[in-house]
Length: 115
Image 1 (spheres, helix red, strand yellow):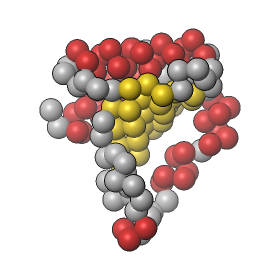
Image 2 (image 1 turned 120 degrees about the vertical axis):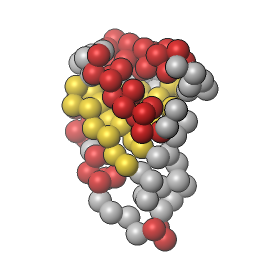
Image 3 (image 1 turned 30 degrees about the vertical axis):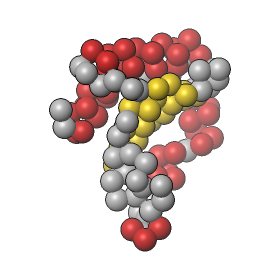
Image 4 (image 1 turned 135 degrees about the vertical axis):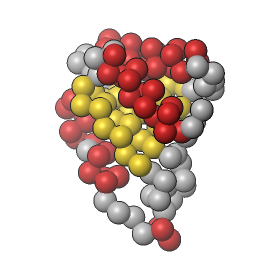
């Protein structure tokens, strides 16, 4: 399965589970940590937990294993490490505070790309 197909599948899973304001950011020329970052919001701490757990479960069904959830103790933020795609799921206020979309949307010169 191509990385773009996996990205679309993740976006669909988040959308089907009522994630809010799903944004994908191409990191290929900005960082070596992943090919894409997807940022989405949930409505409550329970919704954030459900979104992250459902995402890992659905990815496993299509053969993408080894995904991890970071921030299990947090009520305001979860991170799903889907190997070449990083998914941040925030409570709306925390998402606004960290503003990852702005940080990662600016062009980064190739020589300054970080790991």
